[in-house]
Length: 414
Image 1 (cartoon, rainbow, N blue to C red):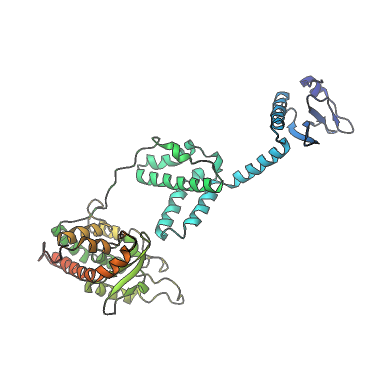
Image 2: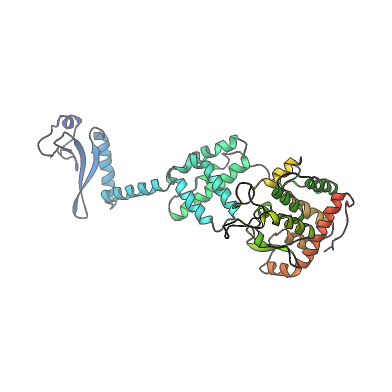
């Protein structure tokens, strides 16, 4: 059996036609007329002669060529054609390079578009975009736990631990989706337990629950001198105590403020249920003021959304997410004292103390009813009581604002 040596290969000279150096267990060197020396491996598979290329000498050394030959021979022994395996590996590498984290993350986002509330969808995109500079260009199959860790470290260093863990959860969702469609084999986030600082303990939204303090807040709100729309939102927030996102994205077609039973009807994305907010006379008065400014829609765009609280830069978008909180900060209330979401806790606490039925309060807060018939039962059983409760609540807040009421049992105990 012939033996290939470096001396033999280096001394080989080109001829007018390509010629081969002696074979060594199927491995040989093809010398081209231009002086190139190419590694080839000849073998039989399925009764046919096959040829496999291993690169050129000396870029691929004799030792490396022999290792590649042995790898090919092991595949043949296992009943696998090395040429077919190489084509499959190349196709897989091409697919892997196309399946970057950014590409798959965008596909996952589009899949969620119909099931996530718009504000939740936008937050999910924002969170993923935070790590795109680190992971977006990387093939999913290349991403290991340390890569994810490096992408999250800047958030950890900035002390944004809650955001960091939420981003990690979104990354994990993308990888679980990728595993499901065959674009990845595992989720690297699973192996990061203990590698990041723990998320802070759960903090509830700050809220005032002392009647005297609530009265002072209502007087401060009356004195707010910001923009007309933000002032309207700030005045309505304690009266309606809906989720801040629901308030700022409210649209005029959802409101009936001229009928015998004024109300606001909208779909709650969080619970995927329709909700009715009975409107007290105070809320109706505020909405009528707002309607003179924002109720007319956009000239020339009849299909455009008619937001009750349009954005300062574009009426095609609602006012900014932090508008009410910023107004509260402007009134001197810190985030530790009161938030836009905190009006819900204020109402829930004081309405309970004032004797209103817990079920009526929970339904007014648009908390999901229990049981398959819960929602239908609630609409039939509690709407009239909730209408009375909302008017009594607004009157109570007026009393606190004037300082003439501190506490009082105007509700009906369960």
